[in-house]
Amino acid sequence: MEQRAAGKKRAVTKDVVKRFAAKSAKVSAQLERRDVPAGHVRSAKVAAYLAARRAQD
Image 1 (cartoon, rainbow, N blue to C red):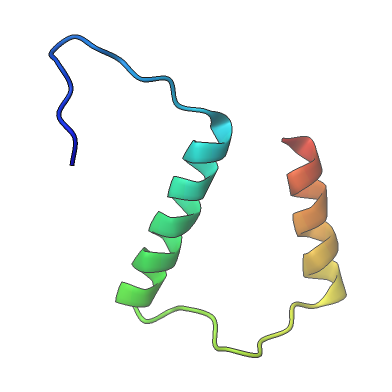
Image 2 (image 1 turned 45 degrees about the vertical axis):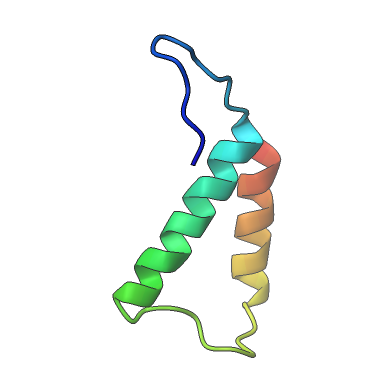
């Protein structure tokens, strides 16, 4: 891990925040044994809902 001098800030993009949140949610689900099994297919209604949510961002 790299060390930064005190007081220095680093810009974080929306994309980085989204990737971090997705990774964190995935790991949390695995720890709580509520991850999605391999081969699972989402319903058309859920896929449409998620597409609408992604379009809002």
